[in-house]
Image (tube, rainbow, N blue to C red; front, top):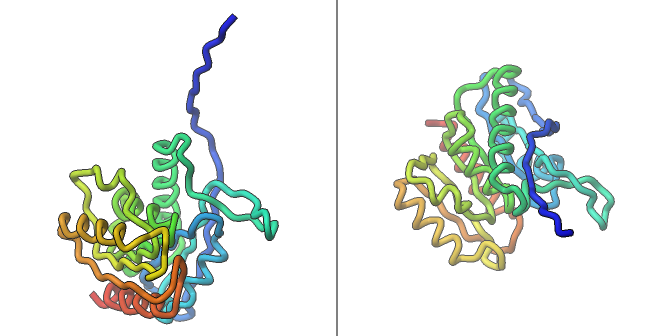
Length: 222
């Protein structure tokens, strides 16, 4: 006898985590929230964000993806933002997660009203989605080695803040063709864009860190 198999989604509660670094001087502070790449974690991403010189004047939060797994080489716990399975549900869960992070930081810390999202690789899509849909006014996006997700491209009402878009010249994943497509799309939506192509690959470099520092300074001084 044959059987029919159906797949039914069901909400489930899980817990995320983020690392928050607080400046020594008293607030109010601007807020920088970052999203790591595939197979990384909040600690790794916080280390990258910490390299930006001006970040010492910001509240800096590194958010860890909700889907942890063990790295086979190191045995450490890393994470992924989503897979192709139940992708639409994961998008909504992730956006709500980010909104909760920002709200909690706002309750616990004194903010000056400037918010920037930063994303690397797989975390780029999260940065774009957070700026568009998380419900907190965003004043800038720092984008490294990742492209605009298709669900945002399909949204005719999409609004985004000024963006810094960067890639490594030798990056085989975020190619120049993808970057050009993103820049063209952002221009079509009248989004101010700064661009950087640096010597390197799919990675953080000193040249990018300096560009991110200048971008954050421009956002904070508006």
